[in-house]
Structure formats: structure tokens, C-alpha cells
Length: 481
Image (tube, rainbow, N blue to C red):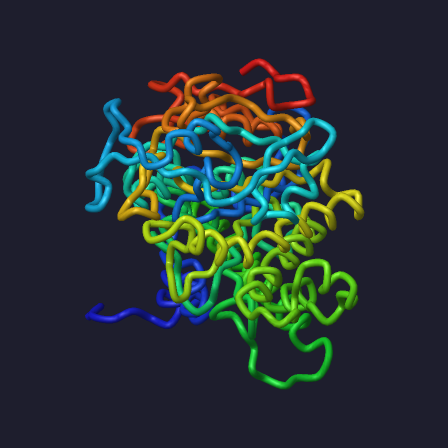
């Protein structure tokens, strides 16, 4: 009678058993049977020589206001309080009067090229010569969830791999002790859309983002509480590797086994390596002061710690790092429906200094040229007021900041109309941005595909979109695709 498994069958079908229990939490889902999982995280050659080794995506949940921070509109000052007579999209209550609202902050020109920045972001303004300002971005949707998913995965609906997952799948990891894709978020709460913004979708789970906490043990669900003599963990890992290789020889035709073994072994290596990479005690007081850590503002200190962690992860060879703003008490802190002055003052106080510090720190360490920073929200804001002092969502125009990684510092690219409502010159879509990011990492957005349900899927959905690499933003040559 064969009503239950033998011990040998149980170990085979569970992928060496107990290790899968902890790792299933870390990776969230089991790997599907797919050709792509055999790739694992081994380093892979790009399609052409890359300009960038690492990307830092600073996702500003809520929708920063383009005209109040980056794209001043004198016409709004002139016509403040007047009714906007042209057709304009309205969504939430409070904007029915269509009354134009002026910018609450003074603007000044910064850097050699006279780039406009509001007074509320002086630290970002101080690195104007490193920044490429894309003023003509457009979003795919006016709701936070759909727009955030679009910005991170290229589609409005959930279930597709994120940009970092495509990078991880395309290039593998440069540091075999760490994942290729790491997420730095507020450990107290998820921002809007949560894990949907760094999911692996229908790719193997090894390509999804790995969450790292700002405080406490950095790698969630992967902490060793045993006090063991030095070298014991390393010897255990060596023994595990020997057992895995012996097991693999017995089942050479099972494509998912190699990737599954790689997952378990990566988890063990992370347990040893990550705490050292992310040990903030190794940073000088001057560096911590530069970022604003422990300067009397708890929220800024938390965000600054994530930015400093991002720099350390770049140094460690991590391919893609995603940094999120505070998730508590507001999951979308840039969502200035109530008052564009006070709402922006609050969040700018948190993110401005750490953002400027990260760019400066990477530059002085010789890392900025090989690191691409993307600072962006999911959409912009309307030129009309909401309830007199706030602004509603605007999918037709927003500003994205780029720095390092072969982009032209000091460049203000594209333009919106005289009121900042619609992008009208050199419009850049999310697909264009994704194609450009992949290009800087040596990947063609048309050639980087994954076979799913009989189709060769791509990040930019290049079969049906006209996504392009925005060569005008770059200092390097655009390779043909």
C-alpha cells in the first residue's frame, strides 16, 4: 500500500525539505515551472557595453507637484484665482470651480545651466549640475494604484514583473551573496500598492525584490538567533552545497531544481553577508550628518538611513535598489490634496537633504557615473485648486529627475503648457523611460524577453508600443535595437 511518502520521496519533492519553509516566506511564492528559472542569478552578459552598473529608483508615492517644485509657471501667478476656461480633467470633490492656483514657493535658478528649483528643496537644487530634469513625463492613470503599478511594471494592472525584476532576470547578480534587486522601505507600513511594486509577476520568484528593513535585522524572515562559534555557519553552508550538488546529479532533467537550490543557498549567504554590508556603525559621523541621520528629525533620519543603505548596496554590487518614502502615517506622502504649501513643506523636509546627500556621496566616491538615480512620483498635479489650497491628480504631466549613469547633468528636457497641465514638447512615456533605463544597463528593451503563455513578453510591451530610448537625455551613444 502506497498511501504516504517515504522519507526519500518527501525530501525530493520538497526541494531538500526544511529550508523551503523559511525561504517561502522570503520569496513569497514557489517557483513556477518555466524555462527562465534555469538562468538563476548567475551573472550574464548584456546585449552591448553598459554605462550603468546599478540603478536606484527613489519612488515618491503620492505624486509630487511639478509646478510647485520643478516647473514654475508665471501664468499661474498672473491668473491666480481665475477660472480655467479650457477643458480639464476633474476627479475628486473640491475642484469643481476650476480656479487656478499659483505656486506657494519662490523659485531660483541653480547650477551652470540655470535650472529652476523651488526654495523648499535647497539640497536637491545644490546638485543641479548633476540632475537631468525631465519635465514632460506622462503617466498612465489618475489613480495611485494603477499609476504606481504602471510606473514600476509597464502596465496598469498587477501581475507583471517590475523593472527591477527585468534587470535581475537580464543580468543576474554581480554579488553572489546578495540578491540583484533590493527594496528599502519604511518597515512600519507599506506605501500605496505595497509589494505589487516590486513583484516578480510570472517570472520565478528569485527575480522579485527582496525587502530590507531600515531598523533592526535588515533581511526580513532571515535572522539567525543561534549563538555559534565562528566558522560554523560557513561550514554548514559548505555541507549544504555538497548535499545540493549530490541531489542535483540524481535529477538532472528537472529544470526548476537548479533555481530552487540557488534560492536556498542565496538565503544562507545573505544571512552571513547582508548584516555586514548594511552595518551603519562603519559610517563616519560626517557622512551621517551629510545625509541627516540622527539630526533630530526622526522621519528624515529613517529616510536618510535608507538612502545611505542604497549607497552601500551600490558599493556591494547590487544591480537594482528601490527606495521608498515614509509609509506611516501617510502611505502616499506627496499627495497634496489639502494644502500644497504645508503638505509639500512636510515631505520635502524629509526627503530633500538625503536625496542631495546621496548624489553628492556617490559623486565623491567615484560611483555616480556608473549609478543611475531615478527620482519620480507616479503622476503630477493639476493647475487648478482643490478646496482652495490643494491640488488633485494629473496624469498628463509630471517631472522626473535623473542623475548619474550617463545622463546629461544640468539638462531641462521637454516642456508643459503655460499652466503646467499637459506635456507638450518632447513627451516621455513610462515605456520610454523603461527603455532608456534598460539601455543604460546594456539591455535592449526589444531583445530582453520572457516566454509566458506562448508569447515573448517584454517590459515595454514592444510588440504593440512605440517605446524608444530617449537619446537626447544621454551622454553616450544609443545602440540599435
